[in-house]
Length: 317
Image 1 (cartoon, rainbow, N blue to C red):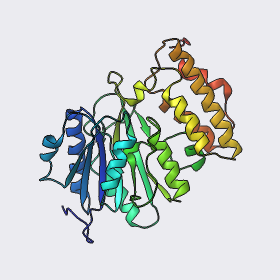
Image 2: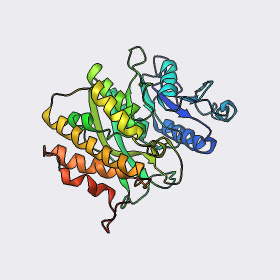
Image 3: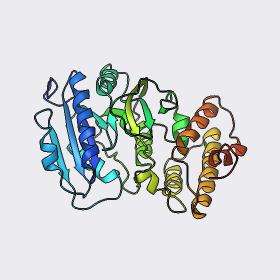
């Protein structure tokens, strides 16, 4: 495998923020290495330690397989924006890919995504991801019963909700532009970036309908998603309000669904305030509902809001 592209640059820089999760970081790096073996072009991994225990010694073990840069931040930022931005500032790749330390690429991810970018018809490529409540090292042979994030591109849908898994995205390097992950956001910072790239930079988007990454949502493991649902109003509610203000829309359908999502957030906030448990994959259920209706240009269904928070027996959880 080449370590650099023909012009001396890596073809893709993979940015991995991490904090005190050495075992899953090892799996993430192994998945980057496996994907690099399939790619025709060089890969560099950029590991950004967000104020946790030093990772340089662990990462050193991968330098014989691929170029690896390590950034050790002095203190924890409490989110992914700051470490990802630190990685972007160092990224020399023609393209950027993102991978959280607890997720993995499948072997074809970089090759398939970069091929579409190299064709010249897109600046922003995303592929499908499987959403798993248990640790996976490979793609399951049978996806029955598993949720996936694999929705066709729809800018209206994106203005309402983030239906892209961060680890499924590969984009043209925007290091030399002012666009970055917004450090004011501890959640939904990836959604904000997708909007910045598509609206401010005019990035052309292509969706490839293949499952090439794993998004882990383990119910027993604390993380930014679960932690954001522990207080009312939730961080998701606050982030949604912030992003809707930052990226206004005069599209009536977008406005209607933004109001609908605000009603969902209020319902969730009331449950959190009442110390009730929020279903682990709630948002993925909401995305499926939104996609079906927005793609058909159907108006929001107000009666559907409470249904996402009930069990099959009709009892609020």
